[in-house]
Image 1 (cartoon, helix red, strand yellow):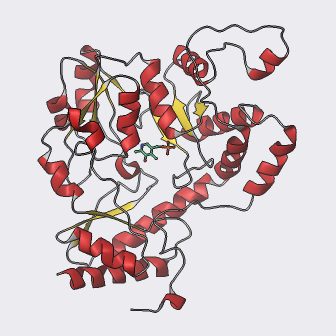
Image 2 (spheres, protein in one colour):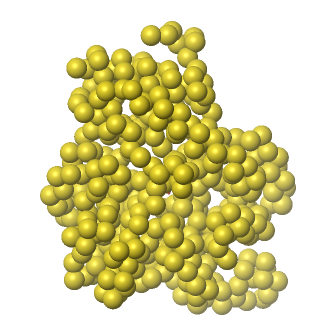
Image 3 (spheres, protein in one colour):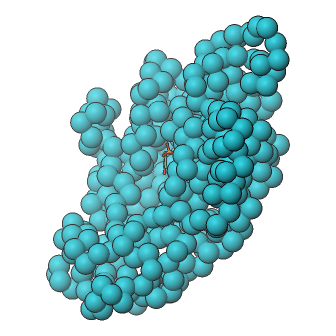
Length: 364
Ligand SMILES: *Cc1c(COP(=O)(O)O)cnc(C)c1O
C-alpha cells in the first residue's frame, strides 16, 4: 500500500465542505453592518434556495434540527401523537420528535436503499400517528405516492420528503451539499404555513426586524424562540449557492467514480442513491462480513470512514420506543461510509477502494 506522503487529496476525511474562495469576502461584506441576526442576507439566501429548488418560498432557520422541530410544531404535532420514521437516521430526527412531546415510531427499511418504503410505513402506523418523516438516506427521494391518499385520509402528514407537496427540511451543516456553516431550510406548503414558521423562528413577533426597529412597539402573536439564521451564516450560503451546480455535478461525478471502481470488489456492495436524480450526500457500502474490523483497519490506515448511522431504536435515550427491527439491525451492523466530498479526485477514490480491498482481505 502507498505511503502517507503519496496519499491523494481528501481520503483522511469522511466529509468536508467545498469552499469556492468567495465565502470570506461574503462574510466581510456583512460583518461591518453590525446586525448579525436575521437580515437582508438571510432573505437573499431564502430567495436563492427557492430559485434553486423551484418553489415560491423558503424559511431559513439556524440548523437542520431546528427545521425538523419547527416543521413538526407548525403542524401541531405534540404530546399524544406518534411520528413514523426510520431508526437508521441521525439521532436528531428522533430528538426533534421527542422534543416536541410526541413519540417516535420506528419503521423498518429496505436493506438496499436504507430508507423506509410504503409497506414499512404502513406496517408502523398506529391510531395515534399524525406524521411520517421519511429520511432521504444519502439524499435519495423516498416515494410514498402509493400510500399518499391513505395517509391523507387518516390525517397523517408527511415531513421531509423531496416533493414540494410536503413539508421539506434541509440541513446546511458544513458536511451537507449546501452549507451556511450552520443552518437549515424549511419549504412551506402554503402562505399560512410560512407565516407560522416565521413567527415560531423569531420570538412569535409578527413584524420583521426592520419594521420592528422603525416602530415604538411590536405585536407578539404566539409562541416563538430565537431560531433565525444569522446573516453571517446566510452570507456564506449565498456565496455557496452561486456555485451549487458545480458542487452538484462534482458530487455526482465522484459517486459514479466510486461506482465504477467498486464494481469489481467482492464483499462490498454500493448503496444505490439514484444518482441521476440525486445530489449524493455520502457513499455507503454494505459489507458481507466483519464491518467493525474493516472500519478499524481503514481508520488505522488514515482513511476517513464513518458509519451513518448507528440505529436509534437501540439507544438508551429512546428505549421507551424500542421495537424489534431485524432488517435495520442486520444492515446497520454492515454499513460503512467511505470518504466522500468534492475535494477528492479519481486518485482519492482509487486509493480508498484499494485500501478497502486490503481491509476486507485482512479481516477475512
Ligand atoms: C444533518 C442531518 C440532520 C441535522 O441537521 P443539522 O443542521 O446538523 O442540525 C438531521 N437529519 C439528517 C438525516 C441529517 O443528515
